[in-house]
Amino acid sequence: MDNYKSTQIWVFFFTLNPDFRNKTIFVPHCFIMKIFLAAFTAFLLCQTGYSQNEEENTELIVVDSLYREDQFYFGFTFNLMNDLPSNVNQSGFSGGLHLGIIRDMPINERRNWAIGAGLGWSINTYSADLFIGEDENDTTIFQSLKSADIGYDSNRFTTYLVEAPIEIRWRTSAASTYTFWRVYAGIKFGYIYYFKSNFKQPGNEVVQTKVDELNRFRMGLTLSAGFNKVNFYCYYGLNPFFDGKMPNGEDVGVKTVKIGLIFYIL
Image (cartoon, rainbow, N blue to C red; front, side):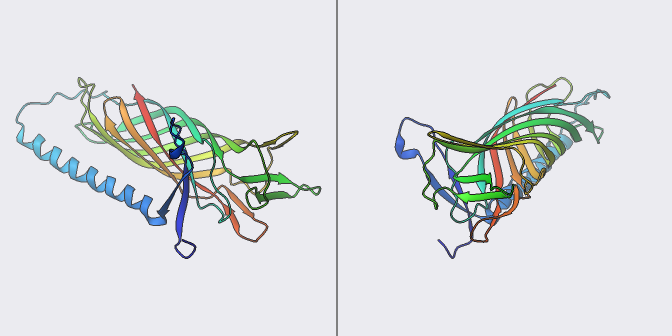
């Protein structure tokens, strides 16, 4: 696999069967982008079929000129790490909590197409054997705990963000319809206003909150789709977390893919 340029993602399955733990999945770099393209193509086909059915229906549709959808959201995700240095692996549980408000702005008479723009908040944890510390000169150290054969109890970093999602929205809803299909695709901008890495081993703890190599501005593609209350959500990070170097000169990098569920409330 060394000569095959792929993204390595460690996914931890918390079940009673230990055989499901520490499974390694190798995903090509282009695979996640293909998911977005396939979902968007299905979305267009669905909209075409829906429009055709709508044209065949001669019933008069009364449109509420003030009708909007999905103003508030909250969600839960599993956070997967990719573009890791070759000697670093994800380990332990990594998850996220996301919530916010979006201004829904319909752009057609039927009001089933809209632009959404809003403001949100998010907290995310990432667990891996990537040590983040500093030396006596306050220079940041990035080190693989596995390569250094260093034992530890836990090692993770946490990000707190303010976010600005922008979406193109399509749904089969109406002013009097509360269960409907939706597909929302867009981009989300974020800023990490607080960062904390925490390394623990017996008799020792290292906490780092100031990392000059941290890219605080975040950007990623988003896709949510579902019916009624249950909606699948995916976020694909476009820029890496860190601009630093490993001891062997390799880029630290680290991007994220978030997969989970999102819920919308009027």
